[in-house]
Length: 310
Ligand code: RIB
Ligand code: CA
Image (tube, rainbow, N blue to C red):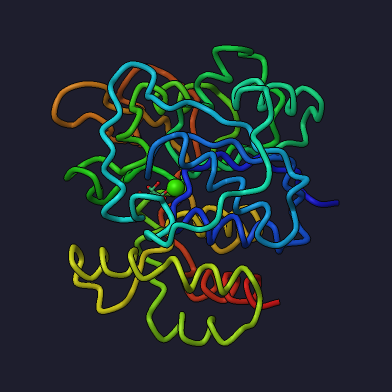
């Protein structure tokens, strides 16, 4: 039986790859996308989410628009240099045909979890504001989800937004701390593993030999993301597979090794957005989460290629 998922996303170039993977994987049934601010503004990520479900004929999948702002702080858009002003590598794809549904992202998450008790996996690949709002709306969903898989955090490695904070967590540290403390079965797919899996220029060259709408779209939007990685990380054409790694976890968790611990998120000061795994349980008690610390990178890349070229 396919795993029912909602993808909470701020598309975004790597979000695009993860969403295309999901829509091409028989192991998962995508019940909806919920959009959130992050890589670009909220109204743009909502439009991009609509474009992505329409890309290969999944326009029937509902898209619910979520928050344009973090819970408490202001939104400092910083993703344009990475993902383009339009979140799609400055390719300005055509306006989507569909519209977002009336319900908010938080309400859609609550309703869908309540309608599928014990069966829903939430894949969060953007800031965690919508998930925190859903918990505020209905705390009981924490006991009703099958799993929450978050692309975010840096438990034992430097951050990518600041020396200690990863972007999704940094964008809304308060929301992230709420999500980490909720007591639902949560897996953190952080920079500890996503930066170990690099999609090389050669890998992409082979990938782009496939002839389908998803690969064509990814080929078109990816140069901006590659340029950023070259400029900032000197990656010689390689790119990190942040969101696709979180999607890969849902399909093949065996490719990852995890260690459980309570995770706290710093919510103020210069270390805001830092994810601290309390391995020795030295701080106050809170539910543990599974923290991914290692990965079979070749396995993840093979899965990405297999799904995008099938
Ligand atoms: O730190 C990487 C994360 O931030 C990814 O989800 C990427 O899309 C950006 O949102
Ligand atoms: Ca993302």
